[in-house]
Length: 102
Image (tube, rainbow, N blue to C red; front, side):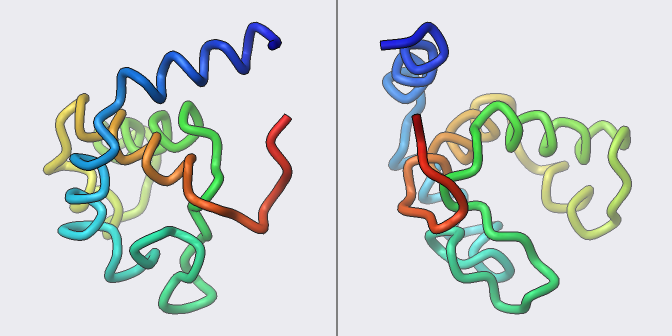
């Protein structure tokens, strides 16, 4: 197992996937879909299988204003650091057509 794969496995164990799913149902699913694979319109990105560090950084950047999108800023503003970790890992473990995991 590579170092990166080991780090992701450790993060998956630390994240609360059930809590991540609950937040996704409350906040994210209306646009990105419950599993992140079927957004409601093509304008919204597919999040299933996306790397959790990328998703977490994007959410933190929307929350801080470093990344500009008024809709996402409002959604991310309600998330705690733990929520962000849980949501990012929840989307990561969802089946995806985006890419293969190595």
